[in-house]
Image 1: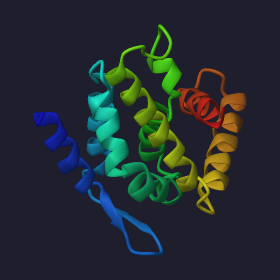
Image 2: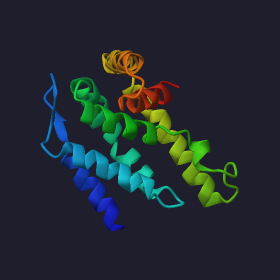
Image 3: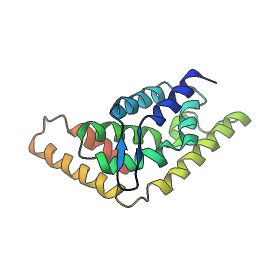
Length: 163
């Protein structure tokens, strides 16, 4: 077992919890989210870390609950949206040469598709899309008022996520 897989488990466990009303993020949750992004950017050819996060259901149990509650915190919103974009990246984009031809590669490819399909239910959570829309609207209004503002980057990422 890779050391990073244990690190992913520990990081996910330390993000926080939901009490049914609101997601309670731990004090170092932003660093944990950034660490998950760092790990995903160094994923292996067999996408082991992405598959591990999908099997751990971190998107379904933490991220979709965290986003609506922390969308007004720019640091949280930026990191959360970036992580969601990375996790929901279409499987075919991960394979530049098309779907793998070998049996093991095809099995991994299909597992990644299953993981993406399991994310769909999580995104039906009531206020997820409305909070993301409000953040996008706010970012675009700020961007129109000040073209040189650094807040354009999160709005661009949110547009990519909407697609």
